[in-house]
Each structure stands twice: as C-alpha cells, then as structure tokens.
Length: 115
Length: 115
Image (cartoon, rainbow over all chains, first blue to last red; front, top):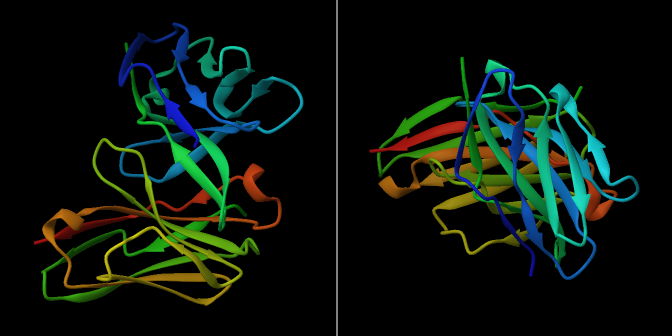
C-alpha cells in the first residue's frame, strides 16, 4: 500500500529565504507524485506533479520538486519565499485501486512566511 | 477552463435537516470525487464516480448519499447528520482517461456546520 509522510507539520521561513518542504513516500510500484497547495478556506490547487521522465519538475509560482527514487523522496523547494506563499501544502501519491485512481495525501505542512 | 464550482460555499444545518451540496465542472471530465476534510487534516476520499457510475463507497455512513445526474454534475445529499460531520467538503474531477497519472482538479469546497 502507498503512503506519504511529510516531515514538519509547520515550517516558518523569512521572506526571501529558501523554502524546503519534505515529502517521502512508500510505494511498491513506480509512483506518481503530486504537490498541492491549499490557501485558507479554499480548495486544493496543483503546484506540480511527477509521472515519468525528468526527475526535476517545475511547477507554478516558482516551485519545483525533485524525484529521488533512491531516497523515496519528492521534496518541494522555492528559492525565495513570498508572503503570498503562506498556505498548507500537501504531498500526494496516486495509486491504482479497484476503481481507478486513489490519491493518498500526506498530513500536510503549514508554511508561514515571516516579514 | 480548469474550474470546478461548488455551491453553497457555507451551510449550517440541524441534525434533522435534509440538504444537498452541488458540484459542477465543464471540462469534459468523466471522473468526479467527493472528499471530506476536517480542520488541519488532509482530504479523505468519500466517493468516486467514473463515467457516471459509482465506483467506490469508502464505507461512508448512509446519511451521505451521492448522485451523479450527468457527466458535469455531482451532488451530495445530506440527511440526519451528526456534529462530527462538520467539515469542508471538497469536490474534484479528473479526465478519467489516463488512470493514476491524472491530475485531480478541486473545487473551493463547501464549509458545513452541523448543529
């Protein structure tokens, strides 16, 4: 069965600093990995995803993530944090099930950006 | 247009009420999902409709009843809910063609409070 862990339920960075949000997964098959962002009182918005091919994936709003199979990781980074990046971030693995696609979400990491 | 709309945005109901949540997408997607999200938790899958057929019911209580009138609409009928059912209810859709590598597009959610 697939699972996702996100180290750090809350991460604080200063504006302009590097953002690093950690995601590790467990999967018995090649994984399909996603990062979603959720702003307060809103739905989830896709930041980026990895399916096959290039292991460094670029997403929206300057975020990128690198798939590392040997480390079973898919950490999210952004070189310079903006105040508008403050939100909840969810890593997810997409798995095959009897009915089709099943998203397994990690517990989430809340990002705070300090002025 | 990658928009999933949900109505109402907020709903307050008593434990004896009957209400419905509505979700709509016009992206031609053939898979639609209902998720429940409690505060500070990741979304949890409740129902999946694939090509207008209910593919899975994740052991959700019968007081929740999904309906898919057509490929663009998804309803969630609520009856005799409990206070612990208070949560953000998210709808999502995906093309339904490429399996587990697909992106799910989320609506903004309905914030439900059961008194």
